Image 1 (cartoon, rainbow, N blue to C red):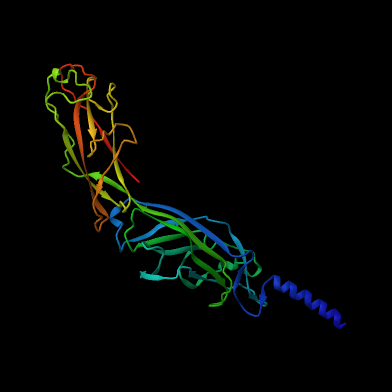
Image 2: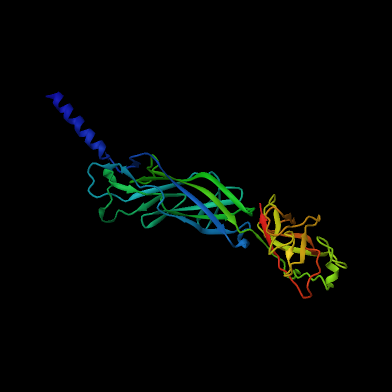
Length: 351
């Protein structure tokens, strides 16, 4: 008879363990291991004025619906009739806390960036870090004690960044685990993590150069008689002179080591593709770099580098170049009398 009682007692214990019965309320555990929610981002910021130390990029990125839900089970007393609210604890995986802004904690992410994270919960936000954040069990709908509730703690949330040091064009964040979440039915009684949140991506500020106001882009070559072009194919007409074009640019967010090159596009002369078309088949204009090399229009391999100054505190730097332009005869024939002009478009490339 004693043996039968022992077997019956063992069967009851197995059933109770499945339902996470305990003497008191306790921690919650995922039924399928720790779930990682990976967040990938690619952020472009067009306002270069924000690229300075001390700027907060509040809620600059949000994510939603990342990963899959998971089930978890909590320790509950044998005699419970109504489940208690679930409590959430969130820890940062980043080791260096830097500053608080309106009670929101930032952590060092890279040399340039600090990060503040908020994770979306059921009708509420979990701040990182946070302890004993209460998730209400409305209408006793939670089934945490029997493992029938689905958690998505980490599938949605928000990132804010703080500029600790101006970004040189772009900063890349490698895969980095930033938060770990726990759950329990009892304050300060947490055990195994339910989920983690990891981030990876790029944040960049707009890069570009604009020509300074007042820069002269109209290049007059003067007047010539048609005979000045005769027998001058590929050369300047009699009395022609080379003109200097002094270009000055204001560039923003150009990191050290980045080269800015200039090339030209436009209609090329049919008789000499090196020359800009001037509306007459016998006349063209050659554009040359400071070393006298011809910048052939519409040729991506025909370019020259700008001279860059130093970045200022607003991540602006000057860029300059002196080009040369000269009129030439493209056929050696005397052109028809008339007034001629051409257009060349300047393109800047960065690498």
